[in-house]
Length: 343
Image (cartoon, rainbow, N blue to C red):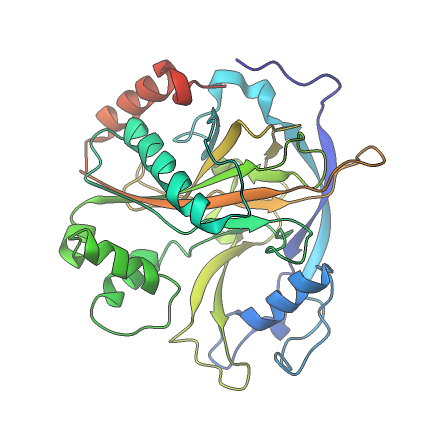
């Protein structure tokens, strides 16, 4: 087990929750919406609070979010109790042979294969494992900026349906590229609906320095109530509100004082946080996505910018009984060696 970094402790952070009862978020059909072009402009400016309407997003109003000061606990203190099927996230020692994260062909050649191998060890019974395109994040203009709002990457109620619909019609969801890959692997809608489908997010630092600025916070999935989720549809064209054909959908979060937030202080480039984005057949029967966000934490003068990579991976597994799933997975992750050694 990697020891807790010296002087690391629980911290306070202000997180951007969705404001309850904000009618400005509602589209013509009553569902909260989000303009992709507006978010991209925010990322490029580096100002996450900038909600000034632009030509690309004239109908986005101010006041969508409210800053809430919360405690964010040191997750390293959880030790071996921290587990994917309990908290929704887990820290792994995951070295990589990637030597240049800016070299896209090199990363595509090396990293997905590493993730696939890692997932195969985590889930030996998986019949299909498909890593999805990696994303680099930092404050640099050449990468995507980090997201500082609690969110999950997919809306639980619609993700599997979106994948299946993508096989038969051109729905405007961000899973379309993945559908092409799944078809290449011989996956059909019937296979998706008759197996367990799990999507993981693997987040790591790509800097030679430990993470000192804007670390990732993850929320204990057990502390989130279904009523805390705010389902959002992403639209490409502000002038054409078409919620029934979004380009993607996902969840944001309403504040609840029961939320328990964690972070792993001073993560190194050999460590990775793995958390669940989707699970069609979760242990216990009810899935709650792992909400996550970047947040500001005090850092020493001259601390390097955060540079990170996240990659999603879809795994198709047989549907086991609940007891074999929980017991087997605990055994695999807790006793595995090498890349799978639990921190």
